[in-house]
Length: 144
Image (cartoon, rainbow, N blue to C red; front, side, top):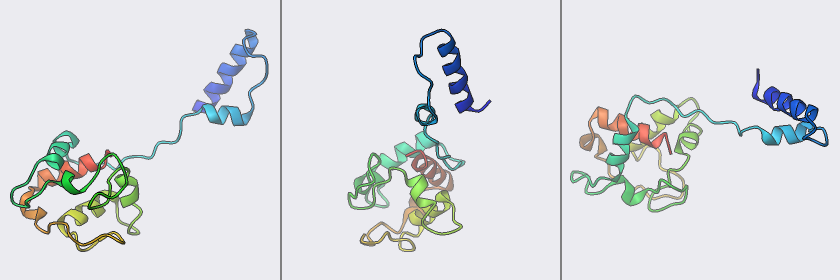
């Protein structure tokens, strides 16, 4: 049974018990339903390890990802804020998934420079992170 049907059934049962004085309209029912959830793209990495990598200073790059990117906001720090990146990245390039867009943005940051942002991201992340670490990092970002 669909979730909205359960709400209607519950309303009728409560009405039958005399606890609801008026019928529930479709608008009221729709307001009781949870908001649709956007599916987070599935990535093979470990988001917990990725969160640690994101915040760890990487000597080869001379910086940590968290130095330039917020994770709790879409607002600019130096680079774009990454909150909701799994949704935004999936809409940037037609036919390209969010994880693929993020991977390319990390490995070849000059390929996709967000409008009005300088092209200052280190270009050596492919030497900093192993393939597994890169997957962990992307898995973490897909949870933001």
